[in-house]
Amino acid sequence: MQAVEIKKGIYWVGVIDWNLRNFHGYRTGRGSSYNAYLIIDEKITLIDTAKISFKDEILERISSVIDPSKIDYIICNHLEQDHSGSIPAIMEKCPNAQIFTCIPNGLKNIPKFYGDLNYKGVKAGDSLNIGSRTLNFIPVPMLHWPDSMFTYCPEEKILFSNDGFGQHFAATERFDDQVDFGVLMYEAKKYYANILMLYGRQAKIALSALKDLSVEMIATGHGIIWRKHIQEIIDNYSKWAEGETNEEAVVVYDSMWHSTETMARTITDAFSCRNIPVCMYDLKESHISDIVTEVLTKKYLAVGSPTLNNNMMPTVAAFLCYLKGLSPKEHNRLAFAFGSYGWGGQSIGQVEDELKSSGFTICLDKMSIKNIPAKEELENITRTMLQKF
Image 1 (cartoon, rainbow, N blue to C red):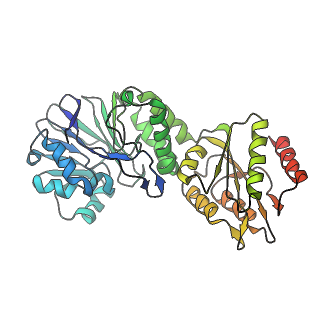
Image 2 (cartoon, helix red, strand yellow):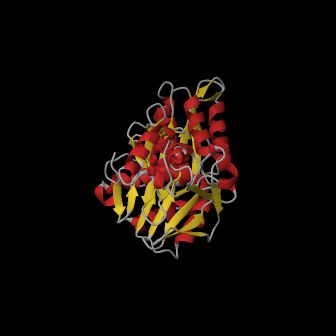
């Protein structure tokens, strides 16, 4: 449980959660980490903590550098318990330490989490001198909680970004140039899609606040620290926040007796015939958080469901509910509904309604086929799509 020095006198003292596989419905197949940082200066400063279940591990890593009782300041960039949960355990070791949190929401809410401790609120433009270094506070409300903020150290050119630019990615390596870049960027994209997509406007505000800063390292709250590919992750955040999409498609469906699946395959082939890159997902086999990662950057979405008990399939309903909570309404994404049915056929209209309410523009009329699709009906789907796209 050794700390890792990331710059002279600055240490990663976080924890690695190798076994995490689900985070609020988001599948975390590569685990995660809860990153905390210890700065050794005239005032010993800890930036963020970890889940309470890892309190012994974070204390052990801090102890590998310094006696925790010597901590003077604790910066709470975000109240969510995966970042702040170990505050009470650490405060037991350094009861006179002062905790800094964002005004108004951090200062208002932190006593509800951790009771009567020594709190001080900070706002945009406030700075904290800790000796040879200064910490500047940058509120980024709703990225992704009302209390969220960045902390910037100008002397070291480090941005302590908490949830911004993070990934759920467990690794013994700490830096972006020590891991596979493609895997890292995919996990950063997945993190943005499943946690921050809804907050594109707030992400743009946060990015604008960084324009005048010289940043040589982004020390995230989850996953890997950025030091080589900083411009790449910032550029991607800018694209994701703007809602930029590629001329690509996602086809999502569930099927009972393969009829809706047959329609999905026909639709997928039609996109491909128009040289539109496409991926197809069966909701029985694919997790919604993986699908949403693809939806983030693709222009077209086709969603299919048979009718079950006068409704869409529960898997399709769950996917659309999850998507509705994330999809920014101001982005011009195109979608359509399809499906087979035995008698009622209500599901196809329900899917279309949910796509509309999620902010998608309907680009094709509902495609519905009764019972098993005939060759002529599938050919009609293909003709319709080739005429449209």
